[in-house]
Image (cartoon, rainbow, N blue to C red; front, side, top):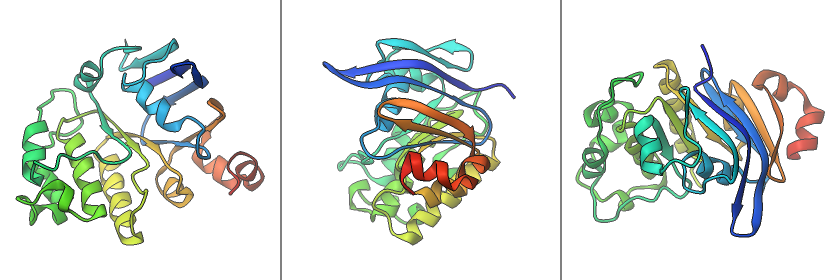
Length: 235
């Protein structure tokens, strides 16, 4: 199967701060994981793909179309779901209202995600439908943030640090949900600091160092190379 997303040599700035200095990656089947130490540009790369911080140069192709610099809402409509770092739930909305508000059918997605089907994927949310999203536990909030993105029926799901701040039990639930999504044919682009989570999910790896993609490889090859991991990640 051809790559769904191709990022080629993008350069992104915050004002005069030169953050991404040449990033390239591709997302094929399964899960592509972006790794790197703090401050290397991982979140900026996700924001560039989503059009929130558009690159000044380079190209981003999604499903054969050039989406470089497109508006975020247009990128989302094309089929990219985004689970941002920090979750960003609405305190005035219940769990169910989050899902109903964002629900969108798509003829091109790998599965038709409805609120009810997402309660099957995340049964913890089913009994808390009327509770404000911001009153959930950290793990439940992460599940809701994932469900909110999935209910738009994307063909690619971007997750930025989904395990951050979660208990080991909650991390396991997020990993299990990601595995279930991959089994449905969903493609994942995952940013992770937790090397154990990356090892459990990744099919391919992209490593960022100082705003540049310095290593793109099959995940099994990367994780077997202890010296390379230590050099690039310090783990």
